[in-house]
Image 1 (spheres, rainbow, N blue to C red):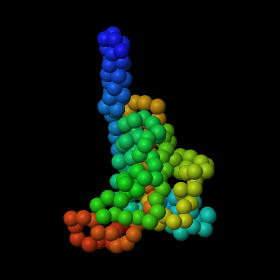
Image 2 (cartoon, rainbow, N blue to C red):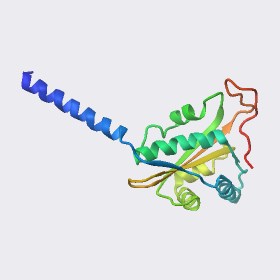
Image 3 (spheres, rainbow, N blue to C red):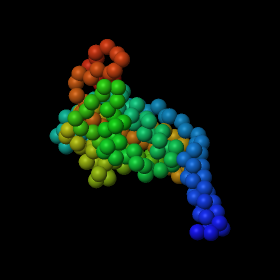
Image 4 (cartoon, helix red, strand yellow):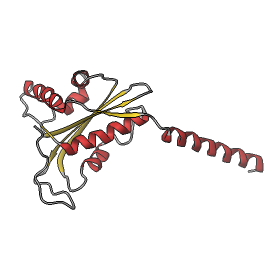
Length: 181
């Protein structure tokens, strides 16, 4: 390959790297939106009850996992991410000694309220399958707002069946998750 061809290939590779680097590091103004988790739990459990399934409990660990993912998808302004996979979900939920036997995750974007997000999930076959998963016992939920972009509101519900008792590394023994009242 001659010098000009080599230089052109190197320049193209450098520019391609810069373009992806810029899109990954672009700072977006994100705000974690406080949501009524009890209302989310009430709506989820009402839906499950209509399908003869037991109620879920709120789990602060799963809410933090949800918040981390909501921030991630809001930063990207997209629901498409490698983190939304079963292996990633296991890696993200099973931290600090937290272990679960089952798990699922619903992502949503554009919904202005928990009721709208729930309606979207209930009417989507794959999301509804997660809401009605008979193996999960706990849930966490979070919302992040992005000041600009396509969707503005990003929701994540993480569902799991934690093994009990859970002992987080570096802490005293405790049965987790703690039910939030």
